[in-house]
Length: 570
Image (cartoon, rainbow, N blue to C red; front, side, top):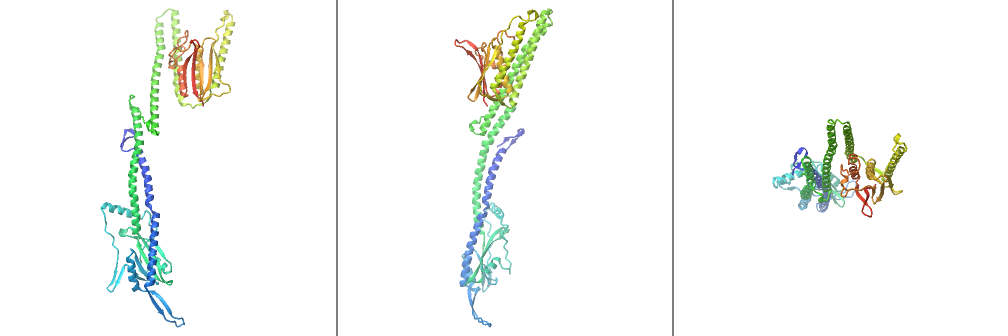
């Protein structure tokens, strides 16, 4: 299994697969190591073996105290003490008894007198022809080379898990009594676990138990039983090998499940990464992100988010392409008019015609300036909406402020017009009153806070554009109404005018860039056609919606247009 790394290099195994495998196997190895330690299990085995050995030693001591003792009579002393009797161990009786008792067990039995001299040893046969010492020979190597290598490795580790370094080393020194024997000659039983060097220098256990040989509570000597720890080692080895077998099966299952888990995680992520890389390097739209949403997990969510992000990127690129094409088209019209006027002006000699051409050139330049300013504002709007942090904005206060501002401007214009009317015609006055401008009124529930999360400056621009649009279509003396109402978890704002309404079938097209549908008689080029497009863009950035509809009366005639904006409340 290979993966695509940085720079296009291929990896044989996914790093994520290796991490998953390492974590799972490490946990299993730690568990296996804890089970293989078996320290307490070994201690319990040693304790049980020591108790059994002590029981055997007490049986041997009781038998020797009864059947291997000589009764010795003592004569009266010159000081007047009466004579009596005493007992001592009889070697000639103890040797066959010890040999018979030791044959039934795998222990080495030795008998010591009260002075610490060894009287009998189960591994030494004494006869008329001399003495024979019995020694155990190491067993020949068994099994194939692999089995022997595994056993050798196990033997080297046995002193580490659990460690036997803390055990005393057993060494027999001629003429030096055994510490357990010394304690037994003092009247108490003693037991010790030793460490000895076995065949090949491998550490082995050795158990020794010494109990006093007594007759009528008189200590006559001590019997020492010695047994190797082979049974303990074999029991521990058997348990460890059973654990290792289970570990081997568990390891295989863990590795298989790890690769399966890595496959369900690493392989889909690798597919997503490769698809994203193809999407980055391809020149068309043939590459797409795999759809893994049916998984129902985090990787499925990642797939869905990547697909949505890719669609959003393509949509953004399409919008940029359309915007560039629309800008080129809109700028080309005044430029064509300018070129035609400039070319004609050089060939016209009539001053009146030249003045008209200069007026056309001035209008086209003003139109270009306004168009470029609006395009620049529209281009910066998207970046600002994506970077700025939203803050609470009270829609009721915002609409009220905008209505008051429009009313103040209307009153100022009306005063200026009135002053012009009052002046004589000879002084520059008109001599007649002009039409009254449309009024802006607000209908907001009293005492209700309609707060939305957003950018106050852009929300102000949104409603300013809608109010400007409504005022431009309203007749003189008409009414523009701003209505705000709570609608569940959102607020709905309706901007109503009394104009001619929206052409049939153009309710959605009016929000397109550079779309213009102006009232009759309005000077061409006064508007760039970006106002309602900016409204739609700002509403979308605030997770809201906007639409337009005609308002009709009972006879079916159009009585104006309504622009409905819905924004989520805070």
